[in-house]
Length: 234
Image (cartoon, rainbow, N blue to C red; front, side, top):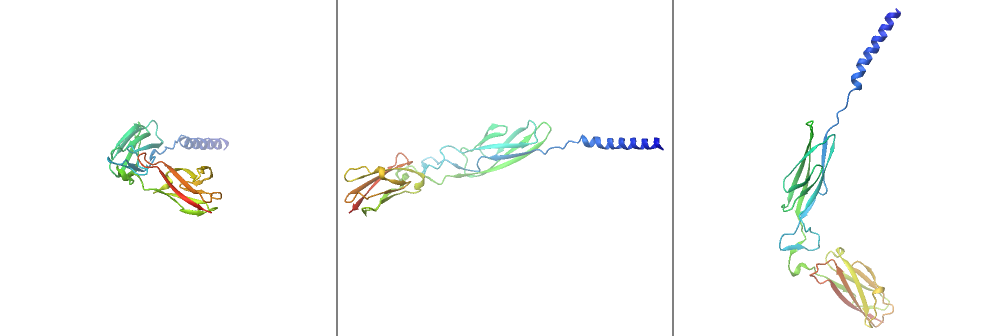
């Protein structure tokens, strides 16, 4: 009976080893994938000939989009790109999609990734190309209308408030100057906040205050200064 028991145990161990060995050698196959991403999905084309940007927001050069292919599970993959329009500059997983000369529309770029094991993955991204809406014809009315609006008169002790009236004034920088009718420089007393300035008048009774602003960021061909004056009543 003892011999039979030992043989039974040996057979059981052998069977267990036979069943366990294949499972120990199993390797899970990783899923191959690629994700194509673009640095931006909305681009604007430059102003056409004879026009230029009004607020310096339209691009001066043709649009380009940086694209990256993020792969998983591939070894030494090959990348092949196709685009509806334009051209691809570069290779492998970092490229540039050049859209120079392209008409407005929605276009697709696709990457196909393969390796020597015949694994394959595909990913796409779409980009919208549109015209810049702030293009204007190149002539005198390119310069935006603007003026400096100050109080006509105030009582001594009441601050003078001036404001630049200019479309989309937040796009620009402002340098303020002020003097009174006696020739005293008041620029050091100014309290400015972008397109608005305030000037205290406690010691200016009976004088006239002259205010001037210089606007930075306008086209060089445009007038970039404006001035106004305010009487300070006793």
